[in-house]
Length: 429
Image (cartoon, rainbow, N blue to C red):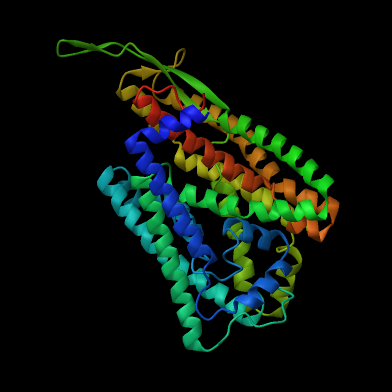
């Protein structure tokens, strides 16, 4: 392994990309621990441990502990991730966006620009809501100290603008990593947020119970192995291309396959479901005490049966919906027919599209169930243990493991591909 890493850093282009990515990750973490102007750092540090429950634990995880601390990068990658998912959904429902998506690079550039505008809008909404919750004492329940030094309009506006500017900088950092670094920038930053909270979680568990620490490590290893197995699982649809003459040359006659993963949707359904479940918590302060009490009772505690049921149904629904908009069997079948490809035993065109839709439906069902089980694992453990200290310090949630494994595998594959281009043996061997 040391020899392979030495070869990685001996490659000038790859070394430059890795160091560039690591430098931006360090800058990203610096912004996540840097408090916004006007925030009482001492009060936040004392009160951040009182926020527990399904929503607050997920917010703490997906923001790397930055949102509850009201840092400059408190919003993290969530505004951009949510905007990207929304634009993908709109690309199916809005004809203009559907046309842009088919125009190639120029159309994708326009969609990316629209995604940036939507990111800024979502950042303004999220930052305003977070600051209002901090101002009214609802961001960290049970905290009796004011989190803001000055609750005037000017001070609140400065904090909101700082967080919005931080979200824009995070978006820029992610795009820089994608263009000049290794892997997908936003995925790398999300991976960084999840990994950043692990050392504190593990140290707290070891202090509470050394035996529990060992048991959780063993369970975590089995969970990671299971996630790797499912993430790598795929159904390969064989495809053959007929021979054809173009000028004086013969093309085609090759065989390949269409890889259809079991978890075709990835982590998107879980992230989108988390955003949807966090939305009532943001809106209810404006609707009155009755709605706020109902949401606090049913939609903020991960151990509530209603919360679990809604969580599973939304994940399954978004999994089917997202797969349906990202993989179009009719379009794939038409492209295969256009280039002379066919599935053995099936006629090109509609029969092939029907078969691909059937296989996709059969794969999406276990994929959606897999995502739901992963998301429910920590919630069920909390309901069984009923230990606040364990709930707060439980690190091996299905969402966190899925993010780490998925992003880690994708990044390693990209490094391996770049090594193979230079005749190296690879990164995994």
